[in-house]
Image 1 (cartoon, helix red, strand yellow):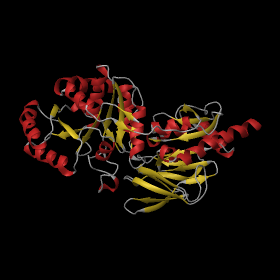
Image 2 (cartoon, helix red, strand yellow):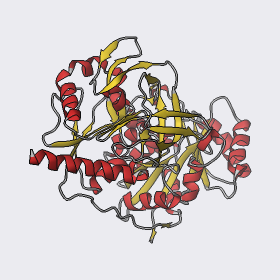
Image 3 (cartoon, rainbow, N blue to C red):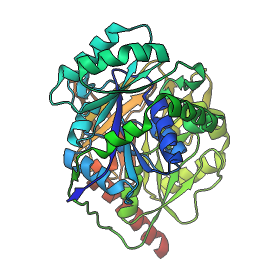
Image 4 (cartoon, one colour):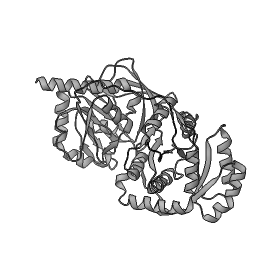
Length: 461
């Protein structure tokens, strides 16, 4: 099928160049103009999509070519974008423009996503401390791979006078237009912590900041030229997706969603719904009980290390999770959720807090990235969602480690580094890896089936 969809992708030479700030400001500009915008983020990122969602109040999708084929990414964009004549898709890149799998290939990079989806690219050029060298850098980036979808440049952290000086040189040397600039205003900066930016919900004045960025961009960027660039994007060719429910019973899967557990891919949650589950949010920080009728629990990643006291004091929910596990309720936990299910956690400040105690083990801060990046996992034993011989793709990114990482799966990184990970039982799967469930359809299917089976078992009792 073919879908005409105006779109563009914001990319940069490196992380820290202002992609998320500029993208969020542009989303607000477009929203003000009445454009039906859908936002996307390249790569395995949970935090940037929260900022996109805070602007548009609609889900942001992840486009990841390690977890998805090029056909699947095109389908995701074509099917999830708005269907009206005023629909437009805005994609935000990941890291540097060409930075992909293993750090030495463009696979799964922003360049790869743009090429696979035939999306025009707008490069954010960091104007700090450079003038003519910036032109040379842009020329090198654009000519590094051909053909190249770069179709425009925005200079960030730049004065109007410098932009006026450099724009003709960039257009002559690089063959693409300069669409404008973003002045260097400290109030535009977003705070970071050990896993990247702070989450959108933690920025008290986020809407005011985004409005201020948008007000500025209306004056410094040619939004009409940007829209014309988007309209010129080729039609998307894609095959419609099809996922059938595996149960008609709509088993309730309780999904932990609060300040401590907030790392979820929208596509993963959507897949569980398509498979027949009914997802109900709950808060391990505030709720004493699981939602009524819970038949399965999904504990995603996040920042449990910042909420040790609150989690430790919620003894009622911890006890219910232990009881649920003993009763055979399926429990699926990733990274932060895995940390919470263990016996105790020592946080960044050295305080040790009792956790849920479902899994034997102690979690502690290492002070550095323990294991990070894409991994391929080979199942070595059976458990919730897995059978021996299964292979799954995932990613890790954490500063904590455990005395019990499990050995249900064997992980291999692109660099060749290997380790064992994940605790698996008949109705339990927990570990540091994060999963993009559309890439793990058998796993997701078995999880929903296990929840439906638990519902039937509970009804018999």
